[in-house]
Length: 124
Image 1 (cartoon, rainbow, N blue to C red):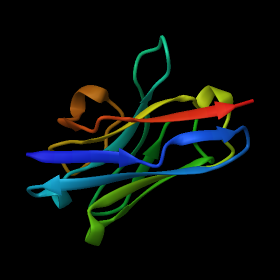
Image 2 (cartoon, rainbow, N blue to C red; image 1 turned 90 degrees about the vertical axis):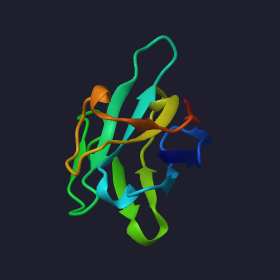
Image 3 (tube, one colour; image 1 turned 180 degrees about the vertical axis):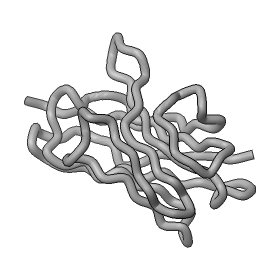
Image 4 (cartoon, helix red, strand yellow; image 1 turned 60 degrees about the vertical axis):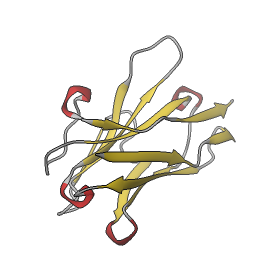
């Protein structure tokens, strides 16, 4: 089993930055691709970014490309999402996820494990 815990959310003004963390525990975490998703009020959950855990290759949604950076620290079993130039439309609950495969994916149904989410609110 894999357990994921997000942290780092909060309230920030437009143009500001936040860094989310996703701490993982459980078996063979290092052999799984990871990702970030978000869900805004009244909307479906959507893909944000994903990372291949072994190679570090990354994949981003067009809406965050150039502003957000996904990274990982293998030694700490932790994944990060650095969010810069935040916009009010980035307001959402952000979830980290892991899948039983090495390669990244932008599809929610490809992920087997989910964190509880952390709220990010961007004021205008």
